[in-house]
Image (cartoon, rainbow, N blue to C red; front, side, top):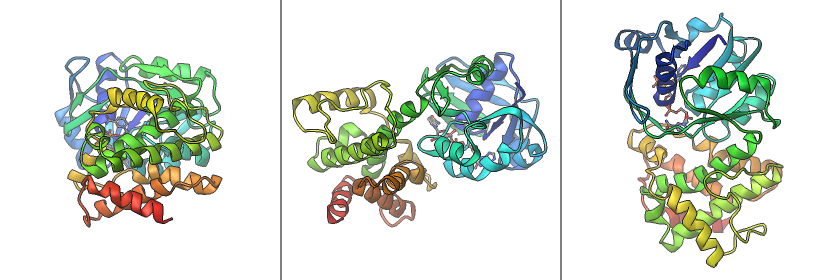
Length: 339
Ligand SMILES: NC(=O)c1ccc[n+]([C@@H]2O[C@H](COP(=O)([O-])OP(=O)(O)OC[C@H]3O[C@@H](n4cnc5c(N)ncnc54)[C@H](OP(=O)(O)O)[C@@H]3O)[C@@H](O)[C@H]2O)c1
């Protein structure tokens, strides 16, 4: 498959370097010419899980240079806003039968599929963890994989082709229920991750406070209700996506506590990536995570006051008007209760 990888950040860099090291090939697109020139001379270097590897890209250029070319596979590895912005132009760079593979968190792949047509977009999500220390210098942080699949469900031949192509470099798994898998990740991103970023700590550190527990339960339950109302069957990942005893909402008690313990055991100590965005003064992907759930909730008439309040407060932090702190969880509950 003639392949283009767009976005040479943490994930794009690791995928490209591992693919080249395994003898695969792809063109690489950066945002601008200086970034492409810098990577052309520095090359790509990955350390961490999976071992150290170095690779020299054969074809690397700013995205605009590729817009008249045609590709069988375009891996879209930018952050959410850039993915939504570039998606339509990239769709017109697809060869007949070609496919766009967005791998952003949250609602981005589904939004692109809806906008560009499911025949041109394969769903993707990343359980692969990666960090970019400097341009061209990447660290693979876990032995994770990319999960890909059809929005309509089932296992398609084109997903198998993508797996065969990218799977030379990084582990690719195909899900017959990709939409369900995406939602299961989104449920955790909306609760574990975003609340940790707002509180400025890990889930294990905020969950013991009454407001931490209530905010978690509110964000998770609302998102799960939106998922179910949209006809999705959330897929079991490391934890069961439906809390034990669920009946339209979770019920506090021993069963719920046991379920929460499994969430904590798997995700309780992770530093939220959104907190790193705050620390670096970057725009977050909140509109495609809690904001996406809230928007879909409005469309489906499922109330999402906690996710609305979280989205609002994250924007306030982005503007520099507040700093992450545990007391902001009380603020979220106050705003949600006022609705
Ligand atoms: N990293 C992880 O471990 C991980 C895990 C799961 C999911 N994800 C998701 O995967 C996505 C990518 O994450 P990441 O950590 O790899 O982000 P990242 O390190 O910020 O990389 C994004 C890259 O895209 C580039 N870019 C921006 N606009 C572009 C354009 N128009 N054309 C070409 N390149 C462009 C950026 O360049 P500039 O810096 O020059 O803007 C940057 O190099 C995110 O949605 C994230 O939520 C990441």
